[in-house]
Image 1 (cartoon, rainbow, N blue to C red):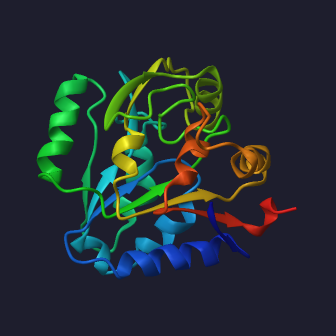
Image 2: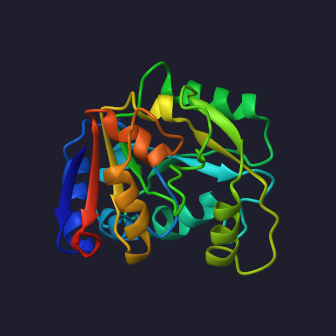
Length: 229
């Protein structure tokens, strides 16, 4: 398991932005929504090179309007896209389209290429994107039934009003591990338990996505020092 520890979120963000700046023009970058990448987006929004990259949203809630405050698209727009000093391209899932239509959209834009750089967070239950515990790990894209932990956390953390969350569409782990570089960020005190599960877990015999992907050489865990010890 490759793990790099940073003193602060700002230092972690600086490293990620530096790595993104070194990518070739038109590189494909897969990005998450939520609170984990906040520091990265804040730093990245001020850079001029972001406009030469193509960003892809990692996932989306199914049948939840994109304009909802807790939709994945809305969070990425508010935290990053709308704050950018330069225009950037964001490819995203349509929450009301069929799974086949959404997959075709991503495949068309990728045009046979893989992601060059992937940024991930980890859920309290070890999910990666909306790859929930127990999903098949050999899918490039999938629509999944949401775990109760995911529903509870997301409903209270991201949405200001009542919302019904049942399913999500996500880039699958089989696609993620084909990327040039994958970073998994764990940077909050509430994630100490799942961090220890990842460190001690058996990547070859697990149903937890965040444990499974640690076996791949291009996967790097970027953690803040508050999680250690």
